[in-house]
Image 1 (cartoon, rainbow, N blue to C red):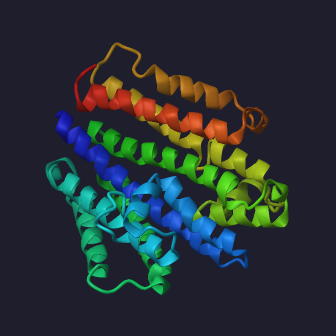
Image 2 (cartoon, rainbow, N blue to C red):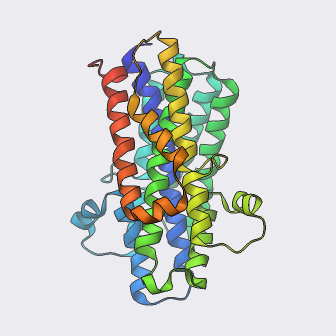
Length: 317
């Protein structure tokens, strides 16, 4: 496969997952904002999603103040935000449009229909009351596209690049949203383990569509941060966990290696990360420090992507 085609497929999937991730962050902030809280807490959940997305400075350079309605618009529709949902969907469509012969007609139609459905929303004035409906539209369409890919694409190297784009983005997002919950949304460390803390964790589980799965995994036991850290980082059956994403990345990189008949053990970084996660316990993570662990994880995933980019997209390795 041409490196350009591989890159287009990868970024199509990654942009779609990013659009999904942005609305899930918005859903976290929206749900938490419904809880009676101090003004500090109210501002904090909306500011936190800017920090999580890495675009707080970009936002403040345009809007100058932290304001709920402006943050919503900035993340959903603002052309000046390269990571807005609108730009993510547009970029996904442009990437797949350039390689239409590498995907099935059903996949192309699903992406194209999503683009026009979302574009229709930009023709009318945005009101904050529309946020839940927009979140649902994006989540529903992204899931539809992913299902179409799995059910119609040939399981070849193109499929590997599509899946890799999805799980690189998901691993990064899951790590960031856990970090935001634990270190930003919770007003005080004295509240760790309290009813407020556990309720916020349950909202976060719902935002990543893992609440019911968590209940299946742990029964009807009380939600607490120890179980949720185990579930969203180390559980090998939760499709939103860091372990699950790393396992998928490792599998599809091995698939590419086999497809292209490569002899080198590429990339060793993902294997090292996978082996490390297999050995970890929640206590190991807490001993290291959750924030420190997540920061290192994000850096490790970024390093794995750099190897992928150099080898398959730039051809420099």
